[in-house]
Length: 453
Image (cartoon, rainbow, N blue to C red; front, side, top):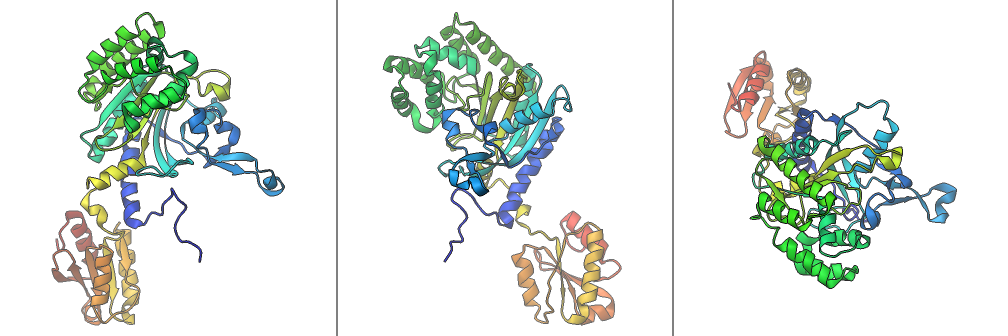
């Protein structure tokens, strides 16, 4: 018999789960919109040349490739690939529609991406990203605005203990050079350092050596990082230590100055006081050129999201560099943490309908449909129990299973009198309401949270 399980690393979303997801997406979209970001969507798959060579060796291995079809299928080659992230498709869009877009283009995009990764807690092969990006400016106001927007999202969702890890690719490169890691091995070192919060100092040390980094240089790098990372490392002190380490390296000094400016710019925003300068932060993707950032909460391996500046990526499509900076929130990880912490509003457990209508015999069907139409025109979400049931317990149990609060009953007596029996399933209170008042009574009950108002 064919398995009914979804493909490994993917999930089906039942109504309760989907309501939680939609709640988070609505909050994210609302905040992004208030920051002036415009919506964008791109296809689920791209030409394979669009994606390859953009994510480094590690990322490139995780691209889901689509084999050629028809007569070319036997070749085993691929010409398309599922979207790996939302940033590279954005770069393609900017290059394609450059004449139609404003000079400073700010977009948000909330869509699924696919990675041929090993599934784990909060890590899937198909998952949603919630991205914001600002194109066309090198101003550090962009970085500050992105971090403020992300902080506002998390605060609106109820997070209070998140921290922003902030670093700079040029500062990182200067640090690696200062401890004796040659430029040719910087890419290998970044891949290893990006795993520091997952495998620890000893694990990264072993991986650095396995990637060809000299043991003395690896030890020097990790010794510096062990003294500048952690929740108690103040931004001012870490920036000074980093400045001293990269002294004499112009790009590194400029990067440290940029980090200082970003911290200062955040002073009056929702991100104020949450920034932690973390010289170990690497962000594995190879297209980053400037500031890089991640948002973390306690007890979560990995981050809730991350991003950075990528001033060269669009140039791969356009032939000239265009400054760009972005941040991506991971919807799946946010939902995992919020579910474990019971952060979702209690009323999300309610079903799709505000009220259910039940008729006790077939003579009540027209009245039930008419009442449902009147309520829906008034903005009330209505479900109808589809079968006549003289046993009142059947629609009652069904309404309770759907988490519907109000049950409107149309029996022979109610039809004769011209009223409706209205039962509040939370309080068990029941009353008879004239048919010409029932729409207002139900609407008021839903708005006030109390039946019979």
